[in-house]
Amino acid sequence: MTSSNDALHAPGSPYRAAGSLHRKTILISGGSRGIGLAIARRAARDGANIVLMAKTGEPHPKLAGTVHTAARELVDAGGQALPLVGDVRRDEDVARAVAAAVEHFGGIDAVINNASAIDLSRTDDVDMKKYDLMQDINVRGTFLLSKLALPALRASGRGHILTLSPPLNLDPYWAGKHLAYTMAKYGMSLTTLGLAEELKADGISVNSLWPCTLIDTAAIRNMPHGEVMVQAARGPQIMADAAHAILTGSNLASGGAATGNFYTDEQVLAAAGVTDFRPYSLGAPEDGLVPDIFL
Image (cartoon, rainbow, N blue to C red; front, side, top):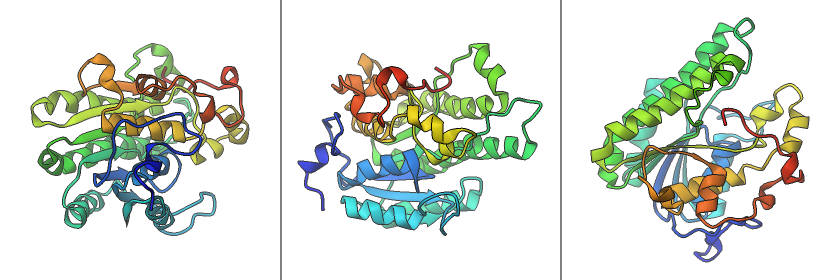
C-alpha cells in the first residue's frame, strides 16, 4: 500500500498535491490504458475507489492492457478497483456501470469522460462509420455517462464531472482541418458548457481538461507516422497530475468559479505550483514538443 506521504507525488513528477482523493469514488470511461489509466493510477495512489469501464476485456493484438490488468495496477498502487467490461455506446452498459459503482462503493464522487475515438480525415475521405463512431463515443457517450451519474453525483454533495475535451475554439481553422473529429470533440465540450450552467445549483462541478502538447498514447502511436510523433510528445502523467489537481481543488480555479472551465494541463499545474514541465517530457526538448490541436 502507498503511504499518505508517498501519495503526495509520483516519482519524477514536479506536482505536489495539496489535496487527496482518499476514499473518493471515481467512475472513468475508457480507463484501461493511456491517459485514462494514468489518471486512475494517480487517484489510486491516494487510496481512491476506481470504477473502470472499458471495452477491452480480452487482450488486443495492437493495444496493451485490458480493464482487468488495469484494475490490478490500481490495487497495486494503493487503491480499490472495480473493472467492468462495457461500451459507452450501449445504454445498458453505462447504466450497469453507474449502478455497480453505487452498489459496490456506496456512491460516485467524480465521473471522468475519457473514452474517445479519433479520425483526422477530411470530409471527402472520412468513412461514415468512423463519423458515427466518433459521434457515438465522444458526444453521446459523454452525455449519457454524465446524465446517468447525476443522481449519485448530487448525493455526493461535491460531485465533479471532468471531460477530456478542448476549449471551444471557434477559429474556422480547426473545423476546416478535420471537421468530423472537430464536431465530435466540440460536442464533448458543449456538454461541459451546458451541464456547468444547468447544474450550478446542484453542487456539481463540470469542467474540461486538454493537453497543451501531444501526449504519448496508443491512439497517437497507431496513427500514420505515430512512432515519430510521440518522440515530440509528453507522457500521460502530466494529464494525470492536472486531473488530480482539478478534482482536489488544487488548481485554485484561476480565481474564478470552480465549474464551467476549459483547462489546459499547463494552466492547472502552474496554478498548483509547477514551474518546470521538463520532467513530463519523454526526452524531447521543451521547444521541440508538438502543440496539441484546438489551441
